[in-house]
Length: 262
Image (cartoon, rainbow, N blue to C red; front, side):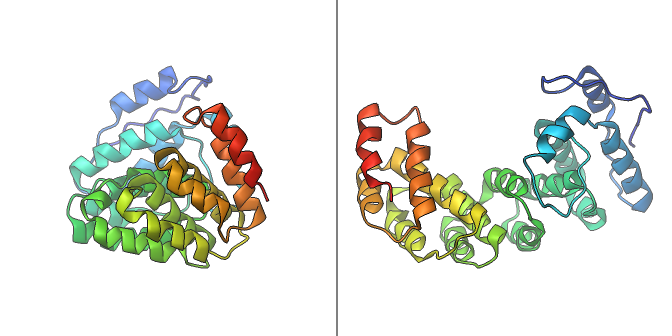
């Protein structure tokens, strides 16, 4: 069942509030989902609202079609873990897409699915719901199962990275940078980056992030790519900036890489 209190939650700038912690303790997962229980679940989510966090986070997540309640990510991860241990498939039959938090929790629940074929079915449906960087990045970093099936999901990620849809492409790129940066994949990754022809902001930012991660792990090969590539000016310069921001790169290297700004 879901126990929901009516009191307004007092917020602060540190993780979970005292009220949120108490509500989390009281949260119990139903084993049988239906419309009534799901309504109670949404009411429970609304009682976890952190208004200051909503104000802050909504300023970062722009142009999403989903209404935001205002719940911190660690709390949503905890909720998803409990759902995944109970009856994830039934939950996914009833879950709705009105609120941003509903969609993010869906992603976290799907990421917990152990059976690959079942995961893949939900994965393919879920990526079409992603319409902002936060849903994309939180989901992509959570799907550890893809590493166990690298051949399949690396190919899938490459295909998505070349998609014209802004967030399908970002999903592909962010899956690569989270799970598939290794020596065997470098040539394919560099080739894919050269093939991406887009000026869409969230694709270009993901490309720059990927180049930064590649440089940190494979500096020599990535330096050669940075010297000669098909990246647009914004992406190239943003990649160099991200590398400059990294504490894992020496000052000498940062000075050297500045020469490759377009």
